[in-house]
Length: 320
Image 1: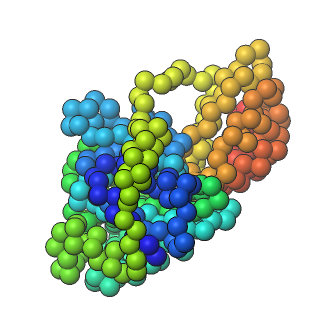
Image 2: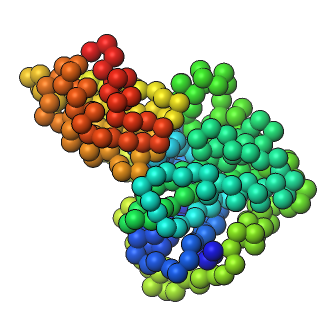
Image 3: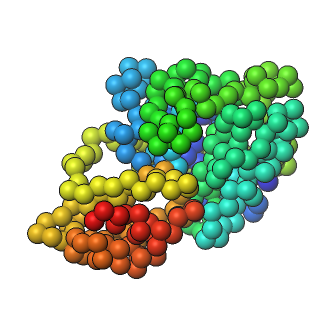
């Protein structure tokens, strides 16, 4: 495993490094990136910033906004959290366990009773200490996660908006109530810097040093692909439905004119290796009735982690 130190606390730059070494510069072994960030809110690929973030508070506190290339939900990070990324050979499936287990082993070695929970979380003593996400890029797998070591959990709670379905299903009142810092669970390391150093030592065996051309390209990618624009189109759809599954939410919006779907939008906190274009393309131009919508969704062959086209079609057309 080759370790790359980006030398930055900018989340956009760290995501730029992910992109470069997954899609543009392929090294001869799997890659590990580790980093910490200034206060940042990271949105999932399919999420609406206006639904997930308190924008006024983010501006007031100078919290950066970044959009990942992976699905999943919004997370808050700061220099008390360690972000990690594995880049390796890819296939068509989302494989969380393959990349989460080595991290869990390191945490257990520090005396932290870590275990996998649900689709993409690591928990310890009943509370979440890590969220993970994964996507495919240029035929390769990019798996990344955030490890809470000494994050400002009060600020995390204030800056994010917990979806109502998570509050209901887990009987919780806030983000703060669900999570825990690992600094309270180990005496083996004292700071997030020391914690990152242990991860590097245990998970990698060689180092790639960024050249100046790498740094220039990473900076370009940061600006081109990862900074969040909050001035985009937010016009309402004529029909919108939240389809909630154990594996995540799929929110489908449809604009309808004279009984025909003229535009489709898909967002949520799901993980879809193949993206959503097949689904939006299949829905655009069809008649707005139950059978036509159902058939269009099924024909799209949409697939996400834990969700298939048939189950989505059934949920989306309930009540139509």
